[in-house]
Image (cartoon, rainbow, N blue to C red; front, side, top):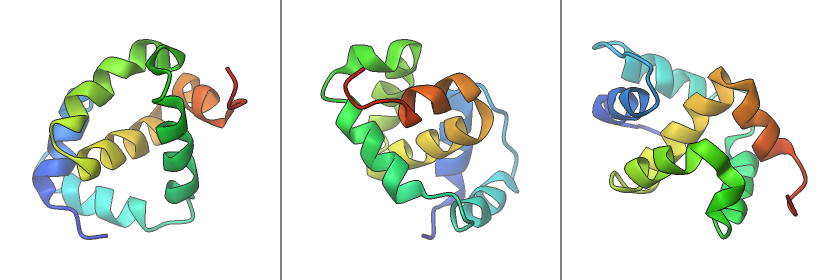
Length: 96
């Protein structure tokens, strides 16, 4: 999934993770690892039908949505990798 560097830096900035000129390359390699991005991203999309279920994270995705699907995927990936509270929300029951 070849993401332009600006998606990595932009999404990182949206969630408070500073990026540099190498952040896009690092992010691209991370997206291709064993992390099941497709399945957990689908869980995010299911939860977006009730944005309140995302709690404080719903604002991050409003910002990321302005960058399109890739912006949302990158933001989701960064949060899954860096924020245990977010992982709990996504990996929790779908009816929360």
